[in-house]
Length: 144
Image 1 (cartoon, rainbow, N blue to C red):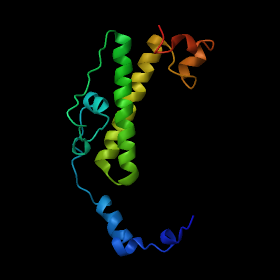
Image 2 (cartoon, rainbow, N blue to C red):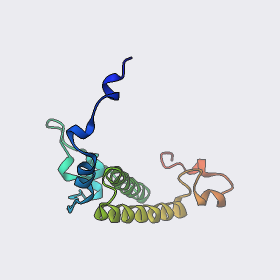
Image 3 (cartoon, rainbow, N blue to C red):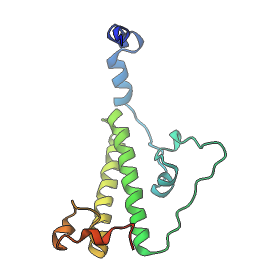
Image 4 (tube, helix red, strand yellow):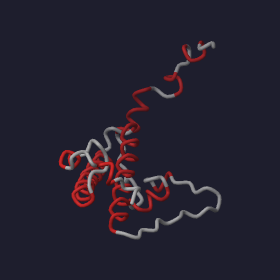
């Protein structure tokens, strides 16, 4: 395959790098985030970026136990943290996004710790798995 086009392509002729990077670094924005539950359901943490597909409606999650509720919260906050992480890859100097990322990471760690104390470890990396004689498999969230 011939890659000459890419080797000779001049990005700076389109937008100089400094101008490009400064446009992200100097953002003074309001992130306009969905709440974690709605963002989790829609698959996008950012209201301005969400585009619904045709006329399909977002389904709600049917939660029937405390265990399911705790797992849903873990999923929501994990999702928000990861979506903010992707945003921060492109906007590393956005302090509002970084503060939200840290907030969701701390909430997620607390929720995982509470869940694991009550129901056992979520995976083999868990600290709780050290206390359970390697029986984390019997506590899989999707089992029982």
